[in-house]
Image 1 (spheres, rainbow, N blue to C red):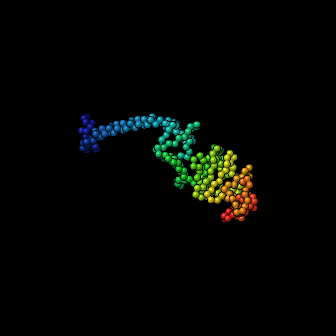
Image 2: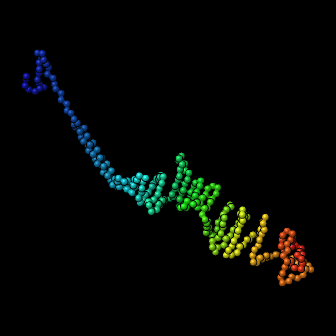
Length: 292
């Protein structure tokens, strides 16, 4: 065995001397600029992780995240609960919106408040728009009930029903109806007159069983431009009063009739029902133009 470096040693195999072989060495690892780039990349990654962790902690702190929810937003079994004032920048979709116990529910907008109801196909079936100058409700039917479930107001395309015990109109010009009005009772406020008027058309008061007009604290007046007719098809017309005054009845004074006594007249009728006055001694004799 020869002493010295292993690279310079030569051996004989089967008595034949072998040629010296050069041994190769390899360096395992990352060296040079690759190592510096790797360390720089790891350093940047650590910086990003620290920044991300700091931002996450800051967001959790600002939004007040906790096990119950986020800030004033609480996550409950029945839904979400908001405490205090909340602002929605986009549309709000919810099955039910209500306030806390013994607290009012306030909906406020800088322009208007719009509430839509949609069907399964997404089409709008009802809408309520509260604007700056008007309130618009669009639906097939509109109904208002009281706390006991009694209908107070109902409206659709065919009719408008007022279910309250009393409909009160306080305007100075009263109420104007373009069509007919069906009601069991019409009366004015205490110590105020009641006036039924049709300025350009006719006024009809009809009832299947009867029409009663009463003025318990004053008089009753019916005025028209042409004719005032009282007609009873099957019954009679009764004038029941302590005094009945018929004014502006024409007086018949034919030639040769006697003189009236103490302003006493006879009440006579023409064949067409027209009334006229005559002196008692004339026997309802008429002069020219009375019954024409």
